Amino acid sequence: MTTPATSKVLPKKELAVTVNANSTEYKVVAVLFNTKGEGRFIDSNSFESVSFETYHTSPFLMGTLTTGNESNMDVLNKLDLKSPVSNVNEYGDGKLFLKLKITFLSGQNKNITLVDKLFVVKNKINTVQGGARQTAYYFVDIIFNHLKYKRQSWSTDLLNEKTRINQYGEQKVNAGRALKHLLETFTEQKDIVDTDNWDYGIGNLYYTLPANTSALTGMSQILSSYVSSDQGSGILTYYNGKFQLKSLKKHIEELYKKENNNIKISSGLAAIFKLQTNDLQQEYTNNSTVDLFGRSFSYIPLDLKDIKLRDIQPDSTVNKLSKNEVIQFDMLGKEFIFHSDQGIIDRVEEITGLDALPGGSDNKINIDNNSDYNIKNKIFALSDEDSTRHLGTIELQKQLLSSLTKATFDTPGNINYCANRFVYMTIDLRSKNEFAKKIPGFWYIISNTTTLKKGEFNSSVECIKLDKPK
Image 1 (cartoon, rainbow, N blue to C red):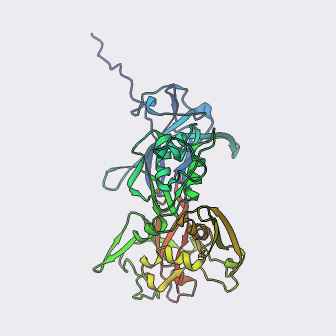
Image 2: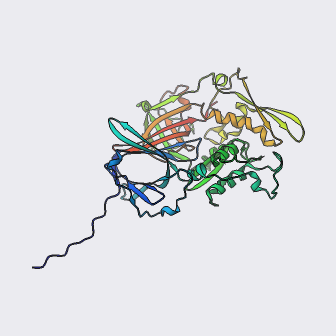
Image 3: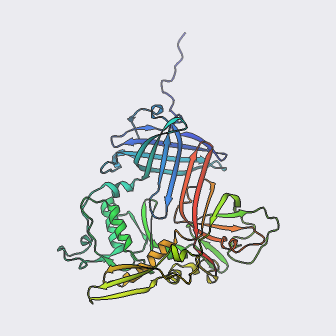
């Protein structure tokens, strides 16, 4: 009798970790690897959680991968990744990378990909939680590696045809052009900037990156002098592998448009919520802000007890905020110019674009201009640029982003709730008090943390209300 043939092909090992959360089954593929192509898969024995974080002050997506005892992981082996490791450039001490992919099966049996990206690991910390040893890997967008660790000389002189370096201020260039050139130089990618969403702004500057300094320092310095084309502050973001730079005003104006009774909402809107108060005697109005999407719209429910609302203190204009007076020394005219009418709340209200929001003509910036609002912050600027006069307004505009009425809440996980986007909220209170009247409308996300772990997929959102009824 002959022996039946048997297959000698070993079954392929399941690389994905299955995480059940919120009645959904997620597949997580996480691979840690180095520049030699050696890596290990994070399997179900070692996976604990993965979280993503965004902040309005940073363009980068960052997060934390938490694993159990490393002894439970696969040993370092040569990996055959779809994206060749040789294509991942690294500088300095950035030696460890993370390939992360998260998918789930939708109700229509379609495979939905939440994340499929390469990250660089900034730091690794061993800790103990609940008596068990754990390792936390802190990761960030891989483009961060180029800007943080690469060391290269750079100056705004590189954008000029002149090769001779003159005294300070004699070879100034447009700030938006300078930032674009800096990003292209350090990433070595000519298409790293989304030119369709890049506001070069007004005003020029001269800057030389100090020796042995990362490009992140240069980015910060250029942005501190940047004035958007509509005389306000700029927002630097990083989506789909490209950087975008646009003004806060334009960002707000693009969010909501009403043409011939048709409402157009930009991709900047992340979610639409309705605060539930269990008030059965609801009151409906014709107010466009309150009933913007109609009574029959399928809102995401948000229980009032699950949201924390913190209103701005009445005296904030006295003890938190200050008028920003720019004292400019014009080097060409050899004279001092005082810009005391720019860095004030009334001026911020004019250039923030609130009139483009629903009911904009009846709204104002979400703070009272206290009659005692007379504390001045003097900003000295050595410049002959007309754009210098707007720096005080921009500084106050940035201060307001951390001082206005704030809401924090937890909701089922969604990585699209990222900073610098918006959520819309309304409320079903029948008899609204003065504070509740502030709630309906668009809220600006300033930070978000989304965590996926066994039994939980949750987003913690922090947002502010830019406008309020007059």
